[in-house]
Length: 94
Length: 94
DNA sequence: CGACTTTTATCATGTACGGTAAAAATATAT
DNA sequence: ATATATTTTTACCGTACATGATAAAAGTCG
Image 1 (tube, rainbow over the protein chains, first blue to last red):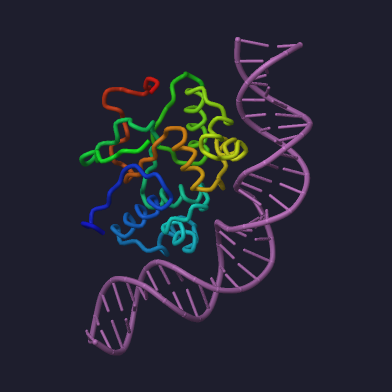
Image 2 (image 1 turned 180 degrees about the vertical axis):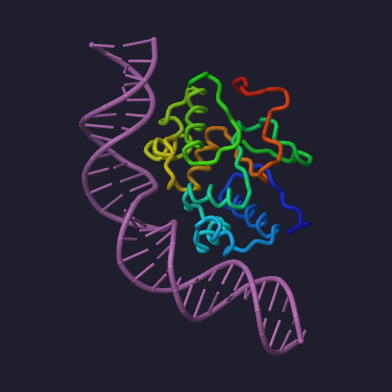
């Protein structure tokens, strides 16, 4: 919401994943109902997932992401990120 | 396993994620027991997750990946695949 | 073979899930 | 602003299964 641009990239929690997913869906002007139909997922599941539900099932989460046209990339931390905007350098954790 | 080189990149299913995770862990010569201790996750959960359990909980999955030093990148499908610029697939020990 | 790692099994507790309808929150129009 | 339409969240219910701890079994490696 900060500037209307969705920030794709690394996520480290269910909350971040949910927010990113919702932002992506909104940007594409899709409703939960639509995704529900396309992916055979309940709107309830989608609603909870996008709100950061920690216990959402992995399989359904992956299906939701795929249905929304999102891709999940796994790489060793620190590996050069996929192209895109300026790699945010504000990272500093253990 | 097949070739000694772990293939990071996009994953589409719980099975792929599990296999990739296990390959990464093995490559680093870590045991389930070790990860269990570091991440406060049961070896049972880890074992099932690495074998592709679809219903594994999202939060624990993310914790496991993080504990193993893996990063989860979300991006629109079609964006240039995560490909390390200077072919850095493995790193030195910290 | 012996040491180490992973899988399986048991038990009890807790909750995810779908379908549906109603309520609440948002968005759009008049 | 107020009304109207659309979207999202919440509440029920019952079924099914995830989870941790522990011990035992099975698998792997040198």
